Length: 480
Image 1 (tube, one colour):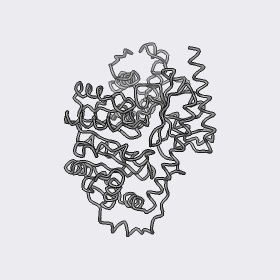
Image 2 (cartoon, helix red, strand yellow; image 1 turned 60 degrees about the horizontal axis):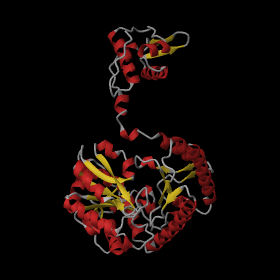
Image 3 (cartoon, helix red, strand yellow; image 1 turned 90 degrees about the vertical axis):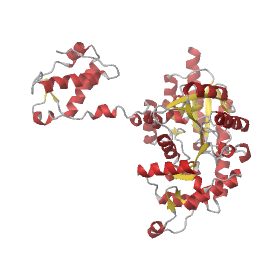
Image 4 (cartoon, one colour; image 1 turned 90 degrees about the horizontal axis):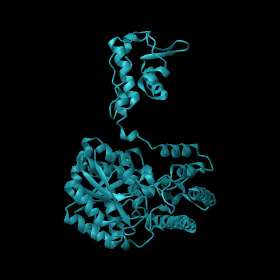
């Protein structure tokens, strides 16, 4: 009777649940009948006892069986009439949810962040600290003011689109017309709409390796296959990219050319022009993620957007969230008018409406006469903090590091090879929270640090923790 058929791709505990349920429903196990002990079931099924316990716990939660002290595990009598009603196995559905699959290391980091202990240094979170976010004074606004605002259409609030267009003209000397801009609820909504409208399940996309895109579950949920392409100091390697394009029939190339997340690298102008030419030859669109655009430490003419080089072939994503904080959720996508219209229509059909509130506030910030001054001050503070973190890492011979030209991430490579699980655990033990390289790639030899969160006050703590971690990891490496 207790013979388990193990199916490929089905967790063993689920197979045990289904087997016991079939016995109950078929009448092989009657109400009040006792099941064999956990130890015996483990022997029958040739599995660990913990697997059996897991399955029985699930059946208890569903109401099919009960545990009685001194009597063991029995088929439920009290709710027999109810429990025999067929039920949807929601757990099996939920097991397919890619958004619920959280890496154990992430869980530990988030647990430490929630503790808010004074000795926990959070350089993992991908946002500016509150003390750096520019503050703006807004005129008095009434509820009626928002209700009367009539300048929003399917593409978003027109004055905000005009303000973004003006900023681009001032910064880079080229025009993104308001008609070519789609306001989105953050940069990720723009990316989501592109996946839904321009790509389909099974399509291949080339990304940089490492890349923050590697960590986003929306690609897996959409059935998009990602292919990582190695980078050098100038950006994505074009020989490798062309090989991937040919082998996998790539439908789109997605890059973050300025102050790349996570490496902080900036693609050279020579490489930008060559990338545009390569994708033109293969008639493949480029998605340019430029959310750190305004956080540059170098002149703007050194980091001209790909969009300026090829307006028709490049989809351009920008954002204010990296300056005004993630709660603003204001991003934009510049694309050919026909593409934006389709994306806007898709958003409307999915009822992903865009509130007027953050758009109006973002427009007030962008058009504030002090906006340029405040952004300049922010960049100066970021560069100062970045240099302090860089100089410390550069002093440690175990780390390889380059000072980024903008943004707020710095990438440090461990020179002694792959970092093991015990090495990552040292960061948690020392309560120094960083983003490990396996979040962004299959490589496990680097860390991403959000240097914007290291100020004059907590720098000594950061230095102490980093030196101690480096010392411990070096001792382990030497013992090997």
